[in-house]
Image (tube, rainbow, N blue to C red; front, side, top):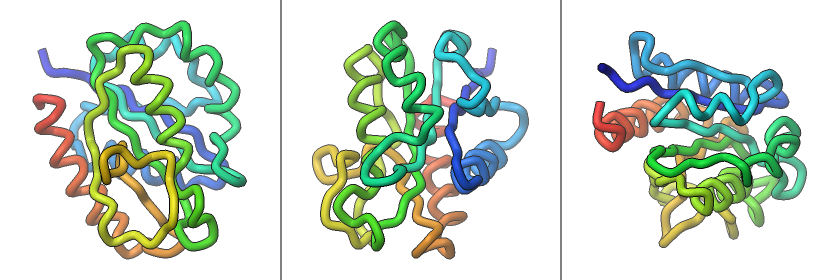
Amino acid sequence: MAKKIGLFYGTQTGKTESAAEMIRDAFGGDVVTLHDMAQAEVADFDEYECLIIGCPTWNIGELQSDWEGVYPDLDDVDFNGKMVAYFGTGDQIGYSDNFQDAIGILEDKIAQQGGKTVGYWPNEGYDFSDSKALRNGKFCGLALDDDNQSDLTDERIQAWVTQLKTEFGL
């Protein structure tokens, strides 16, 4: 049986939702099911062995409001045996000191609950000073910046999805 992937995202301005749809489309077929965190519940994670978590960094290094609302509930989710990939939208110029912090905050919590992080992404080609999403010199997921590098978004998503297909074993 083919693996199903649950893609859970929060969005404020629609950029993260657009990225989620692009990621789903890049996988092709009906492999990825989208879940907007405004309607989803953390219990929905149980349906999938492969998860993709999408969250923009909001204000100054904060989670988007729908993720912030469920963040305490993540302590009650068993992510053991689940492979989890992350993507974030952010502004590396305007918020250089906390670029992509939101996915770092979520990855930290979910990894503590047993989730196996996949989909690490190189930090070359970005111009920022600090990020909670860095792990051993790489982002813990795909970093998108439609404010300053929208011309790279499609190419980055295609490359990341190709990488995830391998890491998810598809």
